[in-house]
Image 1 (cartoon, rainbow, N blue to C red):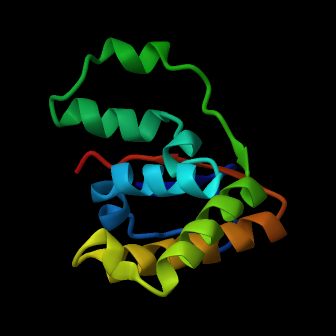
Image 2: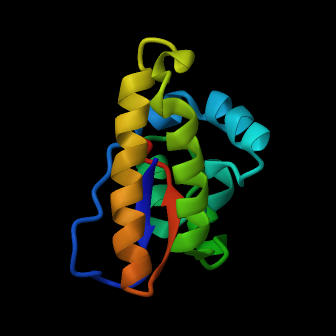
Length: 132
């Protein structure tokens, strides 16, 4: 899972490594619901780039790209509320997610940095999924 920021180039690095987050999405969704915040997956929006990769890998119908709805965009502050709640819940015991818990926590901290910059820039964002 990675962050897409609205517009061509926001002027800052938006790279985040979301592989551990993707592997633990179910556990993070349950934790977010327990904490009363929106699960990360609810910030997902299919975009043309991620769907093109899926189709290149043979995992989808090329007709899907032509029928994709416009991407949905979310306020960075909404994403920050979720990310910060998850960080706070995992900070003292990242192992509650197993051996990759510290890696998940590190990725959440990367998301927090990018979303903070996105909020300061007044831009919107969504999550996308890398199919590679």
